[in-house]
Image 1 (cartoon, one colour):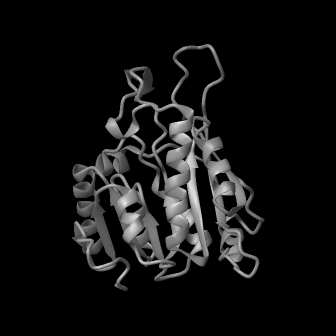
Image 2 (cartoon, helix red, strand yellow; image 1 turned 135 degrees about the vertical axis):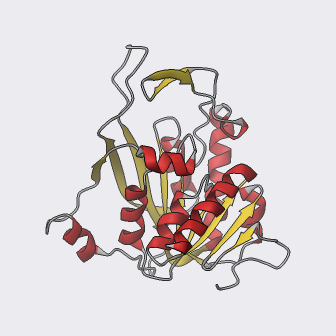
Length: 262
């Protein structure tokens, strides 16, 4: 695997085509090799852990996910988003792209941060969940979508990768639209990942197939329990994952090694 970061960073784990780093994403991104990454997928904190309740698996549960998701003021959230988005831009190749997932709680800040930091938004993908949890308060419509912003560096000569023909083929010969329908993460994947904001593999598969080629280097700066890495490996891409929770990196390591054994 290509040397991606300065020697002062010691990886938590190195596999056949993947590296995992334990620590603060800001610190690690600052030390990574400039313009070394082909694609970034990020599912940053939504800052929703405010002692409220939600529905999961038909049961009423706390919304609290961990210290990393504790609530912040708008200015604090926006400063956070601008900072990590700015650092990601430095490690992204000129023709690379970034995908960022979020809900209305943070996606508007992210969209503004992308423009402020010199990106150009390519698409606004709406992920429509076919089996969203019910709205317990019954004071508004059921939240059934997430937004995924796809952006590139705002450089005139940079030509981003879009595998148009492949997307058309998997969409039964028709142009693929920017509304993607599918279920929440299925139980078998949740059992492997054990993460409260875990994304389904099919979602990452479409993103990676759409915007990279084999052996591309994919970075997830908030990798959680490693779904991005699992899908990247299955599609013969290289992967860099960063997280500040060791337990989740252990799960990621286990999942990646399981793919290697297949």
